[in-house]
Amino acid sequence: MNTNENTDIAALMQGMGKAAKAAASELASASTAAKNTALTESAKALRDSKAAILDANAKDMAAGEKKGLKGSFLDRLMLDDGRIEAMAAGLQAIAELADPVGVRLSDWDRPNGLHIERISTPLGVIGVIYESRPNVTADAGALCLKSGNASILRGGSESFHSSAVIVTCLKQGLKAAGLPEDAIQLVPTADRDAVGELLRLVEYVDVIVPRGGKSLIERITAESRIPMFKHLEGICHTYIDDGADTDMAKNVVLNAKMRRTGICGATETLLVARTVAPTLLPGIVDALVDAGCEVRGDTDAVAIDGRIAAASDDDWDTEYLDAIISVAVVDGVDQAIAHIGEHSSQHTEAIITEDSKAAEEFLNRVDSAIVMVNASTQFADGGEFGMGAEIGISTGKLHARGPVGLEQLTSFKYVVRGTGQCRP
Image 1 (cartoon, rainbow, N blue to C red):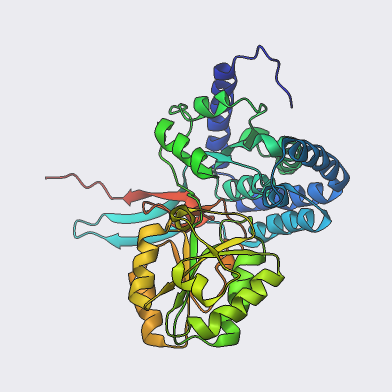
Image 2 (cartoon, helix red, strand yellow):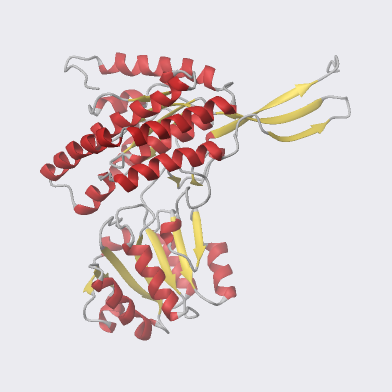
């Protein structure tokens, strides 16, 4: 899937947009059975093509290592047998979910005899722009398909070869189900100009879903002429309240930071109540350091444990995506909430406490897409929420917030049935 150096990028993207719109028109009325067949056949194709996917991924990994990408980035890029199976299982899980299209959301009768229904509908054509993780290619294509939307996928250049093989598998599923293969398209060039052209396809694309780092989101926000579901960076916090269980706090923090450091739901900042910091923090630092995590902290945290390096002002606003965590000692839930309000990207925040009053205070006042009590922030994931998969975590507040799954990829229309009524 390479393009000639002289390819007209604008013409390429116009052609993809036109094909996607035509496919979306057909897909909007596709039966649930056909969509599910496409998904199950795509899952089979992924399993059958495992060797080809691994070979393509090896090329991407080699190129990434040559570019000097850091370990957490390479972890997001890497595929193995388990991750390919997880992609295939994710497609099957989406097939088993209820079809979100054509659902009667509500209905009512008017005094004049009109019967009005609000019915769920696809959005149309969705442009998904994302960075290194090739599994997003499968998740995004599958979620758009099941929700009746055509998709134009623009993955990062780092995962170019992997994503190309994955999309080939998805197209095999579409073909087997008798659905238009243009319902899922991958931009066949790593040229950055393709992103700019995609953002201008107002005639064909209905919504843009950006998923990536701060610079990508800033560029798309500045350039897009199409509405967006923003997936901003994940500056996630875990706050240990003075009512926390000691063992729970240590276990949850270790998982929230170190299970996978390169995902957007990883905790980047730990806040600890001052009354329990001297007794709790050393044990938590033990666990983090033993797991290979660098710990940075404010003056109070450094004074409690000499292994904690002094944090800079920038640390509180950094999504590390690496084995690094910043720690601040706070006076209690009010100061924790204030710190989160100042530094959070409104992605995911958690409180560890046995005090129900403190928990409710935290849940009610923290203005993030996902708030948790006594759980790892790494559960911030559409699959873990029972959505099958997700395109991303929307940190905006309009239309979709939190994991963007099937329901979030639909809109609605009003259907009005009458018996000849005329408005006076």
